[in-house]
Image 1 (cartoon, rainbow, N blue to C red):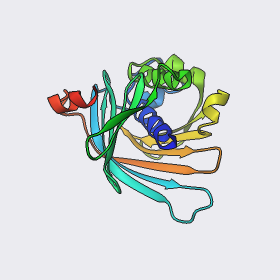
Image 2: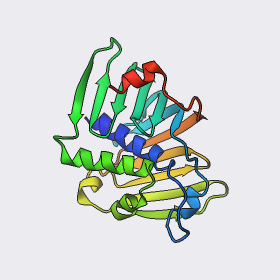
Image 3: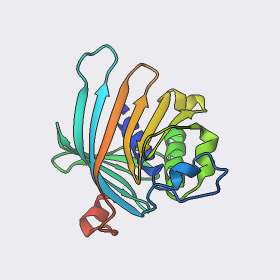
Image 4: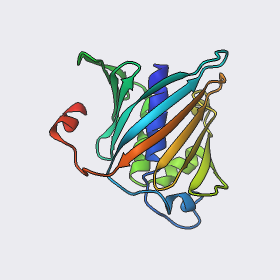
Length: 207
């Protein structure tokens, strides 16, 4: 379940880079003036998780597909093949042999549902949810942009203490800090906005 929580936060981080521009008074105006506004985004990810008390980090890699109207597909290719599907109401895991199961049903978990709702609000450009849930701090950057999100609610603070994002047209790096001292770093590459529609197979994987 902890792995899925991190994946959900990563999906949120990607979504935060896909919102439309807004008024200059908005604390994210500078960031949103640079990022892409696309209905579909594909790419690759490399994750490194440093667990408190352990010398060597845990590494994984794979590819992702973010569809504004559907959700996010996280396909891990190494070290073990698997896939996680995130929609507004659930997190679904799919193993290498094709078997699948609903790990968390958002309709039965109000906390998860609220985080999912926030993620989808970001995709649709509803910034009120972001600024009311996080303290948003922009940081100086030689190129592109950087910002840090600090959760306001105790519930989210139990999951992570801060999220640092940096990028240009897209989110390129994410750093997640957890209360227990664990640190997760994500790097995204190979971003593509095309094809702009889901294939039949991709659409079926969201079902």
